[in-house]
Length: 177
Image (cartoon, rainbow, N blue to C red):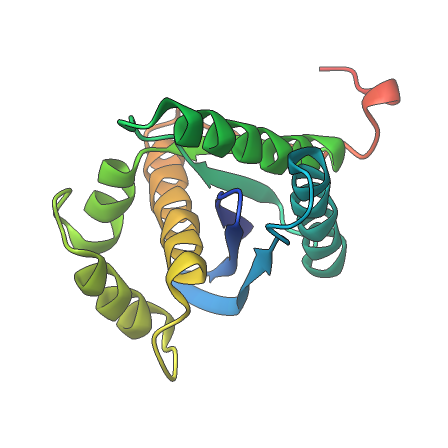
């Protein structure tokens, strides 16, 4: 199973692709989509959608996992983050991919074993788990963690019988559940 993890942001959206090969986790790629802050906000959302669509086309993931919105004291920032998440989710759904969402607490718990782990602890664990030569850029590292969380969660759900194999939807016009 190949998973695209996404850490959405209106300025920087991180992505990480992790593949499960047997019981091993294999790092495929990671990076970030940087939007131009001088561009209008709808244009930035389009850049996120286009960037993630290109990543999906290049790496052909089986599933997508996105970090959930955290509660923010700044309502305007929370709204922009929610819209960036929406652009990311639409890119995945447009490609016919299933989307799962995880809170930061769930991601840290799955990667480090502690929901209150520090960002540096998560990055060190990812470096070890995926055999990375160096710590990934912060947003890309967060996205890799989301992908690892999904693989672990999906594996547990499959073992418990809660998940069966899914078929990839290539066109919503012809989709029949």
